[in-house]
Image 1 (cartoon, one colour):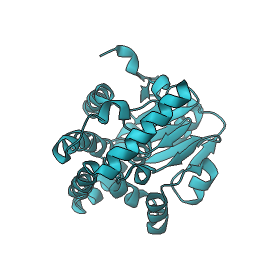
Image 2 (cartoon, helix red, strand yellow; image 1 turned 90 degrees about the vertical axis):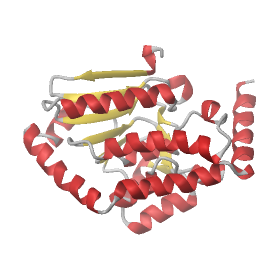
Image 3 (cartoon, helix red, strand yellow; image 1 turned 90 degrees about the horizontal axis):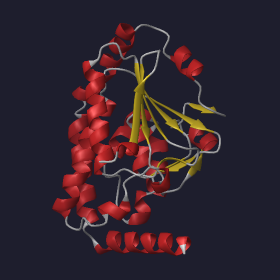
Image 4 (cartoon, rainbow, N blue to C red; image 1 turned 180 degrees about the horizontal axis):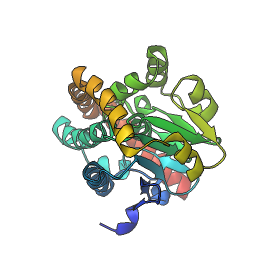
Length: 256
Protein backbone atom coordinates (compact mmCIF):
# COMPACT_ATOMS: atom_id res chain seq x y z
CA UNK A 1 0.00 0.00 0.00
CA UNK A 2 1.06 3.59 -0.28
CA UNK A 3 2.51 4.72 3.01
CA UNK A 4 0.65 8.00 2.88
CA UNK A 5 -2.76 6.48 3.73
CA UNK A 6 -1.94 6.71 7.43
CA UNK A 7 0.59 8.49 9.61
CA UNK A 8 1.64 7.09 12.98
CA UNK A 9 4.03 8.31 15.64
CA UNK A 10 4.67 8.16 19.37
CA UNK A 11 5.17 11.58 20.92
CA UNK A 12 7.34 12.56 23.89
CA UNK A 13 4.43 11.94 26.29
CA UNK A 14 4.18 8.36 25.04
CA UNK A 15 0.88 8.99 23.26
CA UNK A 16 0.46 6.88 20.14
CA UNK A 17 -1.01 8.96 17.30
CA UNK A 18 -2.86 7.33 14.40
CA UNK A 19 -3.83 9.78 11.64
CA UNK A 20 -5.93 8.71 8.67
CA UNK A 21 -4.30 10.46 5.73
CA UNK A 22 -6.82 10.34 2.89
CA UNK A 23 -8.21 13.89 2.87
CA UNK A 24 -9.11 13.60 -0.82
CA UNK A 25 -11.38 10.67 0.16
CA UNK A 26 -12.65 12.43 3.30
CA UNK A 27 -10.40 10.05 5.24
CA UNK A 28 -12.52 7.05 4.27
CA UNK A 29 -11.57 3.55 5.38
CA UNK A 30 -10.37 0.94 2.90
CA UNK A 31 -8.64 -2.39 3.48
CA UNK A 32 -5.20 -0.79 3.68
CA UNK A 33 -6.28 1.57 6.46
CA UNK A 34 -7.95 -1.33 8.27
CA UNK A 35 -4.72 -3.32 8.20
CA UNK A 36 -2.67 -0.36 9.39
CA UNK A 37 -5.06 0.26 12.29
CA UNK A 38 -4.92 -3.41 13.27
CA UNK A 39 -1.12 -3.32 13.21
CA UNK A 40 -0.96 -0.12 15.25
CA UNK A 41 -3.28 -1.48 17.94
CA UNK A 42 -1.04 -4.54 18.20
CA UNK A 43 1.96 -2.26 18.74
CA UNK A 44 0.16 -0.43 21.54
CA UNK A 45 -0.75 -3.67 23.29
CA UNK A 46 2.85 -4.84 23.18
CA UNK A 47 4.45 -1.55 24.24
CA UNK A 48 3.68 -0.99 27.93
CA UNK A 49 5.24 2.46 27.86
CA UNK A 50 2.35 3.79 25.74
CA UNK A 51 0.00 5.88 27.87
CA UNK A 52 -2.84 6.64 25.44
CA UNK A 53 -3.96 6.06 21.85
CA UNK A 54 -5.15 9.02 19.76
CA UNK A 55 -6.95 8.68 16.44
CA UNK A 56 -7.75 11.57 14.12
CA UNK A 57 -7.95 12.53 10.46
CA UNK A 58 -5.63 14.65 8.36
CA UNK A 59 -6.76 18.18 7.52
CA UNK A 60 -9.57 20.25 9.01
CA UNK A 61 -12.49 19.00 6.91
CA UNK A 62 -12.98 15.32 7.76
CA UNK A 63 -12.29 13.01 10.68
CA UNK A 64 -13.57 9.97 8.79
CA UNK A 65 -16.43 9.41 6.36
CA UNK A 66 -16.70 5.71 7.14
CA UNK A 67 -16.12 2.97 4.62
CA UNK A 68 -14.87 3.89 1.16
CA UNK A 69 -18.00 3.24 -0.89
CA UNK A 70 -16.05 3.37 -4.14
CA UNK A 71 -14.29 0.22 -2.88
CA UNK A 72 -16.97 -1.53 -0.85
CA UNK A 73 -19.76 -0.99 -3.41
CA UNK A 74 -18.25 -4.00 -5.19
CA UNK A 75 -19.50 -6.19 -2.33
CA UNK A 76 -22.96 -7.48 -3.20
CA UNK A 77 -23.86 -10.58 -1.22
CA UNK A 78 -24.42 -11.06 2.49
CA UNK A 79 -21.31 -13.23 2.66
CA UNK A 80 -19.11 -10.68 0.90
CA UNK A 81 -20.39 -7.91 3.13
CA UNK A 82 -19.96 -9.91 6.33
CA UNK A 83 -16.33 -10.66 5.49
CA UNK A 84 -15.49 -6.95 5.28
CA UNK A 85 -17.79 -5.78 8.08
CA UNK A 86 -16.64 -8.40 10.59
CA UNK A 87 -12.99 -7.65 9.78
CA UNK A 88 -13.44 -4.01 10.78
CA UNK A 89 -15.73 -5.00 13.65
CA UNK A 90 -12.97 -7.16 15.12
CA UNK A 91 -10.53 -4.26 14.78
CA UNK A 92 -12.92 -1.85 16.51
CA UNK A 93 -13.49 -4.33 19.33
CA UNK A 94 -9.71 -4.40 19.68
CA UNK A 95 -9.75 -0.58 19.82
CA UNK A 96 -12.61 -0.60 22.33
CA UNK A 97 -10.72 -3.00 24.61
CA UNK A 98 -7.26 -1.50 24.14
CA UNK A 99 -5.56 -1.52 27.58
CA UNK A 100 -4.87 2.25 27.50
CA UNK A 101 -7.21 5.26 27.28
CA UNK A 102 -8.29 6.11 23.74
CA UNK A 103 -9.38 9.44 22.30
CA UNK A 104 -10.97 10.31 18.97
CA UNK A 105 -9.99 13.83 17.97
CA UNK A 106 -12.81 14.70 15.57
CA UNK A 107 -11.22 17.35 13.38
CA UNK A 108 -14.15 17.74 10.97
CA UNK A 109 -17.00 15.68 9.55
CA UNK A 110 -17.53 12.23 11.06
CA UNK A 111 -20.32 10.22 9.47
CA UNK A 112 -21.35 6.59 9.30
CA UNK A 113 -18.43 4.36 10.13
CA UNK A 114 -16.46 7.41 11.25
CA UNK A 115 -18.86 7.72 14.17
CA UNK A 116 -18.47 4.00 14.86
CA UNK A 117 -14.70 4.41 15.11
CA UNK A 118 -15.16 7.32 17.49
CA UNK A 119 -17.68 5.33 19.54
CA UNK A 120 -15.01 2.69 20.13
CA UNK A 121 -12.87 5.31 21.89
CA UNK A 122 -13.09 6.23 25.57
CA UNK A 123 -13.42 9.93 24.80
CA UNK A 124 -14.45 11.99 21.80
CA UNK A 125 -13.22 15.56 21.43
CA UNK A 126 -14.38 17.69 18.52
CA UNK A 127 -13.51 20.99 16.92
CA UNK A 128 -16.35 23.50 17.01
CA UNK A 129 -17.08 23.22 13.27
CA UNK A 130 -17.39 19.41 13.33
CA UNK A 131 -20.58 17.70 12.20
CA UNK A 132 -21.30 14.06 12.85
CA UNK A 133 -23.95 11.41 12.57
CA UNK A 134 -24.79 7.73 12.25
CA UNK A 135 -26.24 8.16 8.75
CA UNK A 136 -26.14 4.49 7.73
CA UNK A 137 -29.94 4.36 7.64
CA UNK A 138 -29.92 6.69 4.65
CA UNK A 139 -28.18 3.91 2.72
CA UNK A 140 -30.64 1.24 3.77
CA UNK A 141 -28.37 -0.45 6.31
CA UNK A 142 -27.57 -0.35 10.01
CA UNK A 143 -24.24 0.25 11.69
CA UNK A 144 -21.96 -2.35 10.13
CA UNK A 145 -18.91 -2.40 12.36
CA UNK A 146 -20.61 -2.94 15.73
CA UNK A 147 -21.08 0.78 16.32
CA UNK A 148 -24.56 0.59 17.83
CA UNK A 149 -23.43 -1.88 20.49
CA UNK A 150 -20.47 0.32 21.36
CA UNK A 151 -22.56 3.51 21.32
CA UNK A 152 -24.97 2.00 23.83
CA UNK A 153 -22.03 1.56 26.21
CA UNK A 154 -21.05 5.23 25.89
CA UNK A 155 -24.24 7.33 25.87
CA UNK A 156 -27.69 7.19 27.53
CA UNK A 157 -30.23 4.87 25.91
CA UNK A 158 -32.42 7.71 24.63
CA UNK A 159 -29.44 9.41 22.99
CA UNK A 160 -28.33 6.19 21.29
CA UNK A 161 -31.79 5.53 19.88
CA UNK A 162 -32.10 9.10 18.64
CA UNK A 163 -28.71 9.15 16.93
CA UNK A 164 -29.19 5.76 15.29
CA UNK A 165 -32.84 5.95 14.27
CA UNK A 166 -32.86 9.51 12.94
CA UNK A 167 -29.81 9.06 10.69
CA UNK A 168 -29.33 12.80 11.24
CA UNK A 169 -26.14 14.80 11.51
CA UNK A 170 -25.43 16.93 14.57
CA UNK A 171 -23.20 19.85 15.42
CA UNK A 172 -20.46 19.37 17.97
CA UNK A 173 -22.45 21.26 20.63
CA UNK A 174 -25.56 19.16 19.93
CA UNK A 175 -23.46 16.01 20.27
CA UNK A 176 -22.27 17.22 23.69
CA UNK A 177 -25.90 17.44 24.84
CA UNK A 178 -26.43 13.87 23.65
CA UNK A 179 -23.40 12.73 25.66
CA UNK A 180 -21.46 11.63 22.59
CA UNK A 181 -18.85 14.41 22.61
CA UNK A 182 -16.98 15.16 25.85
CA UNK A 183 -15.12 18.30 24.83
CA UNK A 184 -15.42 20.95 22.10
CA UNK A 185 -12.24 22.87 21.32
CA UNK A 186 -11.01 25.42 18.82
CA UNK A 187 -7.96 23.29 18.11
CA UNK A 188 -6.22 20.24 19.51
CA UNK A 189 -3.13 20.72 21.66
CA UNK A 190 -0.89 18.29 23.47
CA UNK A 191 -1.18 20.19 26.77
CA UNK A 192 -4.87 19.30 27.10
CA UNK A 193 -4.10 15.63 26.52
CA UNK A 194 -1.29 15.73 29.07
CA UNK A 195 -3.67 17.13 31.67
CA UNK A 196 -6.31 14.53 30.83
CA UNK A 197 -3.90 11.63 31.34
CA UNK A 198 -1.58 12.93 34.04
CA UNK A 199 -1.16 9.69 35.99
CA UNK A 200 1.26 6.88 35.20
CA UNK A 201 0.82 4.32 32.46
CA UNK A 202 0.30 1.60 35.06
CA UNK A 203 -2.55 3.52 36.69
CA UNK A 204 -4.17 4.29 33.33
CA UNK A 205 -4.03 0.64 32.31
CA UNK A 206 -5.43 -0.48 35.66
CA UNK A 207 -8.50 1.73 35.33
CA UNK A 208 -9.05 0.65 31.73
CA UNK A 209 -8.91 -2.99 32.79
CA UNK A 210 -12.02 -2.47 34.93
CA UNK A 211 -14.02 -1.24 31.95
CA UNK A 212 -12.77 -4.06 29.73
CA UNK A 213 -13.85 -6.61 32.35
CA UNK A 214 -17.35 -5.14 32.31
CA UNK A 215 -17.59 -5.33 28.52
CA UNK A 216 -16.33 -8.91 28.50
CA UNK A 217 -18.90 -9.95 31.10
CA UNK A 218 -21.70 -8.33 29.08
CA UNK A 219 -20.64 -10.22 25.92
CA UNK A 220 -19.94 -7.03 23.97
CA UNK A 221 -18.04 -8.84 21.22
CA UNK A 222 -20.89 -11.28 20.63
CA UNK A 223 -23.38 -8.40 20.51
CA UNK A 224 -21.23 -6.59 17.98
CA UNK A 225 -20.98 -9.66 15.75
CA UNK A 226 -24.76 -10.19 15.91
CA UNK A 227 -25.21 -6.55 14.89
CA UNK A 228 -22.80 -7.03 12.00
CA UNK A 229 -24.75 -10.10 10.89
CA UNK A 230 -27.93 -8.01 10.68
CA UNK A 231 -26.18 -5.34 8.65
CA UNK A 232 -24.84 -7.91 6.20
CA UNK A 233 -28.40 -9.15 5.59
CA UNK A 234 -29.54 -5.62 4.76
CA UNK A 235 -26.41 -5.00 2.70
CA UNK A 236 -27.42 -7.40 -0.08
CA UNK A 237 -30.88 -5.88 -0.46
CA UNK A 238 -31.74 -3.68 -3.45
CA UNK A 239 -32.54 -0.75 -1.15
CA UNK A 240 -28.91 -0.51 -0.09
CA UNK A 241 -27.35 -1.00 -3.50
CA UNK A 242 -29.72 1.50 -5.11
CA UNK A 243 -28.99 4.08 -2.39
CA UNK A 244 -25.23 3.68 -2.80
CA UNK A 245 -25.55 3.96 -6.58
CA UNK A 246 -27.43 7.25 -6.23
CA UNK A 247 -24.88 8.51 -3.70
CA UNK A 248 -21.93 7.73 -5.97
CA UNK A 249 -23.66 9.26 -9.01
CA UNK A 250 -24.42 12.45 -7.09
CA UNK A 251 -20.82 12.61 -5.90
CA UNK A 252 -19.58 12.17 -9.47
CA UNK A 253 -21.90 14.89 -10.78
CA UNK A 254 -20.62 17.34 -8.17
CA UNK A 255 -17.09 16.89 -9.52
CA UNK A 256 -18.15 17.61 -13.10
